[in-house]
Length: 301
Image (cartoon, rainbow, N blue to C red):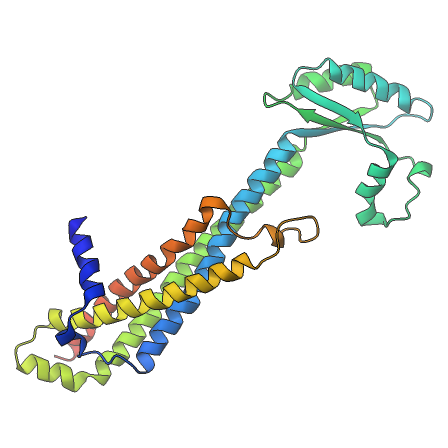
């Protein structure tokens, strides 16, 4: 740990003599900082997608797990009697925190996205719906279905399992895609840093040759490039991370109008996650530049 601390301090402090080997300005400097900044913005968004997807999936899954629906289809004139019998049965069932029949207005609101606002609910043979809220212990679904079959034959119990399973699967796939995007972003950053480092080494071939004549070792020369490009990547990634976090903060808050887009972002301690992007970008630049510099210096021998 102490060794890594000393290395980080050396990178930040720099070596004025060695740093003159690498041009402080020019295309490579701007390219490295711009690439690191752009990739940091994309990395922040990828992190936001992965984190918020997990958060929303957990919230939706928990809400579905704590609720269930009872649909009652019966001949006209028997619906009210079966609803009353079902409510009595549910009141005696362990694990049921509450149960109530949806009003015609609530049923219309459920069907409105598919059939429009003028649907005549009262004239259609729509099943009666009972909303069930469960306790943390849950309900014995098998036992409840058996009792319903004997006492309320027109009732169908739906515990929303068919909705939860696809939701969890979709969240897992989106999280995997977010992590894959982070890997691709890191790979692209490393490739661009390698290209920039190679360009800088080629542009300074005469300076490198002169340094070798006075006894400078390749490790010393490579260290100058590694230090300069690591600091450039750290600076660019810091700016990009700040910009990405600001853009995420400007997204609309989660509500019914904004839908999934409103849930995209970080919450609470989750805002600390983007802070790992600049150090990771610097670490990527460190190893990429070291690899490129040592390999290029061997070719210039």
